[in-house]
Length: 137
Image (tube, rainbow, N blue to C red; front, side, top):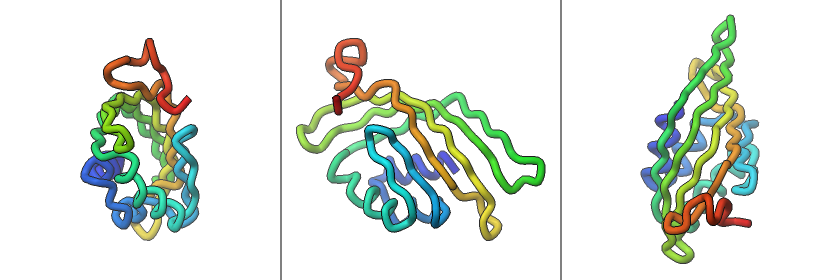
């Protein structure tokens, strides 16, 4: 699930395909990056991402997934290190954080019910996180 999500983001943010990974009442919570709920809002958000980021490459590590005893729900966490290019000024950035996700089985498929990102830093590549921990501050 997470690999598919990252592939779709890194491949240009295919909003139609990304939305299909989420339940209709899902929430994507990126903290300072925004919070959207439901398919319509998710579609709008991800359709707009190519205007924000002209390039993105998600590196996901330290996965931990706990599936419920009845195998209908799961909680998961992943660490994120993302390199990207902000379109507005063609600026290379690096982002680090942690995804905390809730997944459910819906119509026989796993779907994201909630995806939350806690960002540790979102910094200009040339300055680094020690000098500029948050590009959006």
